[in-house]
Image 1 (tube, one colour):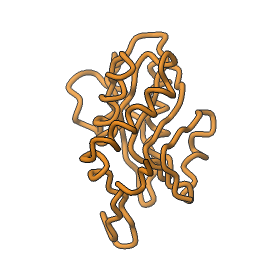
Image 2 (cartoon, rainbow, N blue to C red):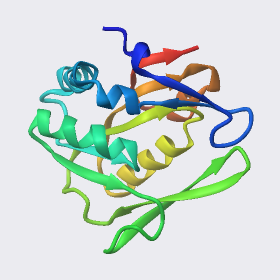
Image 3 (cartoon, one colour):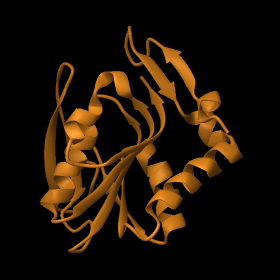
Length: 170
């Protein structure tokens, strides 16, 4: 199945000039969702100890992939959303910066981690998640995405991590 058939383009969202890649039709299509989970599970079965889901769509797919792999799920969230002690990573955006947090006890050591999100664009968010995994002493096995906007060069920020994407827009 061509997963692109289930990705909806939303022009000028969240701001003018951006074409948002909406995965909600993909999530609503049972066979497309199954293919996503099965593809990631086949790629990482036996290779990871935990899946790290990035807020918020990374939670949806990350939880299903973790279940399929028989491993746990750790969460990376925006500041102020996690209730216990956290580590913070700051990253640059096109205009300004942002932060992500992870619980300081999100996973044990040593731990092989799959960083998973819906979209790789400029790489800032995924790069911050990788920093947090390493701050906790984890080994990043790979960064996996449903969609990669290759023309934005996000892989360059993940140069020392294998990157796996199911759909690539060059």
